[in-house]
Image (cartoon, rainbow, N blue to C red; front, side):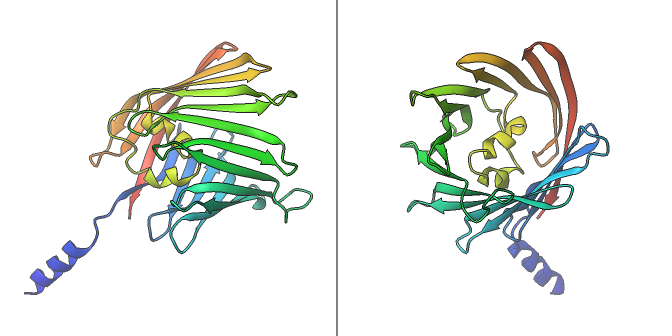
Length: 265
């Protein structure tokens, strides 16, 4: 009878889910992720994995409201654990991020927003543009985004404003057709507005092309290629080979081995 009771209790508990916890590059720690009891990302540590000793560089802390939505994102710079910036998010009546205020905690007046962001969505409900303006109302940067039919990011463009108030392309990122299987274990990371899809790019895509423009002229072109993927039995990515190709200006390829660790929570 006791065994039956224990078995029933175990069956009633929610099944644990895998969550990405650590990424290493060529054996050095690159990222660490931490979560709250609701499996939401609570902290993200970034390490300078290509520097001697791979020191901790930046920590992002996430705060959520009573409704479970991301309300604040704060960054600290290391060494020194120096408060660097805070972002506060606003939402529309559909529960989508409609805007943010950015505070520079090391600026002349950290009590006043240094930059604002306005978010717009397509008829399909996907984020289509983010317009950021500085404290004087001048355009800082505008991002336009397009998607594949399954909702995966397809292209991201950034624009600046010319002296004649025209938008001029400054960067373009093109993502390959997403791989089958999605981003298992990385889902909480996509809560990060605008950059969530960019952070999970090596998990979701086999190739990414990046272009930089100066005065309307392309001045830089790099490619990212992912190969030799290996998966765990639960479908999470175990490791892959990352190759960065320097096309313009031309330079030797950089090849790195990325490995992924998860927690069950």
